[in-house]
Image (cartoon, rainbow, N blue to C red):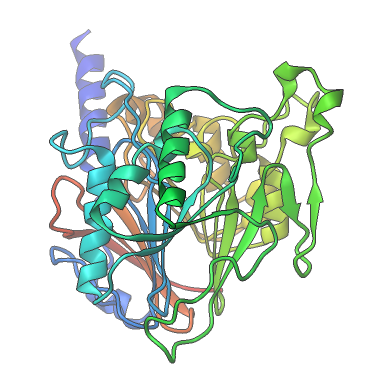
Length: 407
């Protein structure tokens, strides 16, 4: 039995070592200005650049966005408390809460860019791995406007009384008492997340609100349509859940585009509840994009074939941290050229070793499986690159970089 054991150890060592390739500096240069080099600190944001940081704390979702004029957007601030038998260890370590690490990450990148404070914080839905760190973030730097799917009453489809939901609502109540802005996510809007003009004279960009609460943008103007039936016609067991109510948005910058949708799913109980597929209509409205997240952490109920064909991204990002992230079939769909032709890169923020082994046939094709995944779009949106930086400390050292043309 020694040989199989040695084979398993060799496979695990190869998977944990990560991809054994890097783009040379000359190849990076052909795709436009790329300020990031292997082994060096991630370069600071500059006016005209669009930066999307998928922060890898090992505790949930958090994406920090610096838009071309310096407007800042934090999408979620997760703080899961899952045990280490089913979740990766906290990154950089457990000496601080996840929300503190997220706040520190955003603060140092804002500071290096000559900026201060988060203009918009979007809570896609009220689950711990998406919102339990928001208060810790707000303790460290100003959060000017909070946007979520449930404000002001958080009663649709029904009030959630779990401690994590009560804690989030209490935080929102305290903000309101202090005179700070909180807004309900307005589906179809191209102005709710608007330029703050910190750095004037840069090309236009757009954040389009695509879906929330079962309402989906049609792709025309600001018109929307509703997917969920009247709750009175459904048994309570079939009412939409928090994941299905998640907020989704599309960022556009010249030819570059990006889609993300929290924990939206496509699973319909094998066709018996078709309206529970919100991710499909949302991605069809968003259309083909350059970069997309594999929503719901690449879980079994996220991407189906139609969604992959609708989005067709050059780069997928999986915001993963649990033993179930990502699912084998989700990886199969992301990599399959039957769904759409051409090359694509798939990055994951944190993948447990057990998942790396179980899904080794496809996880070995991941460009990264541990580290912050930073998408950096050059002025005008014609070129972009992806830099993966280490999450074992706060040094932001580039471990891998790939360069791309936007379509």
